[in-house]
Length: 140
Ligand SMILES: NC(=O)c1ccc[n+]([C@@H]2O[C@H](COP(=O)([O-])OP(=O)(O)OC[C@H]3O[C@@H](n4cnc5c(N)ncnc54)[C@H](O)[C@@H]3O)[C@@H](O)[C@H]2O)c1
Image 1: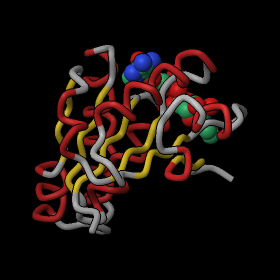
Image 2: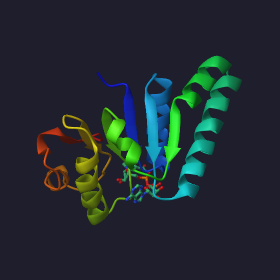
Image 3: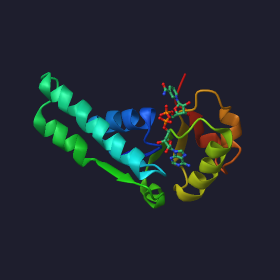
Image 4: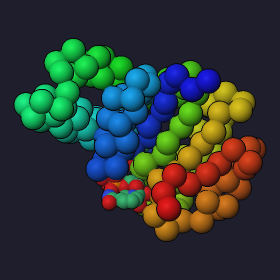
């Protein structure tokens, strides 16, 4: 059962993905190599949730609960504890291949690794891991 999600990359896509998971009740570890990206990601999510509250689409308790389910980190270590991983780092083949090899080392056996890539072959990313059958794309 998936309870905790790791989101790798806190840019435009990563922080949006993290927010959706947190609002849906999942605990989310947001990881990025750049602390400023994490700070921007958190601020963007806070602003978005505040807007939902102002518009009456979310109550303050739900906002606080969603924020409480988010953890931000530059370290990859916490990914050893997650049940599902979404990768949303730079659209660069070698960056993503390296990341998938690392994620494969860190994530528990059986954990699915997905990529938000818009152009890189998922087969190429899967080949960087020992669990190609558990690597998928999360964009159409
Ligand atoms: N922006 C879009 O509209 C859009 C739409 C569909 C798919 N995508 C895809 O989503 C992915 C992310 O796009 P984006 O627009 O959010 O990019 P972005 O440039 O806004 O953010 C990428 C983030 O990845 C981080 N990063 C880079 N290398 C990393 C690493 N090794 N480990 C952890 N974090 C790392 C960067 O610090 C940055 O914060 C890309 O694959 C892109 O093609 C983007």
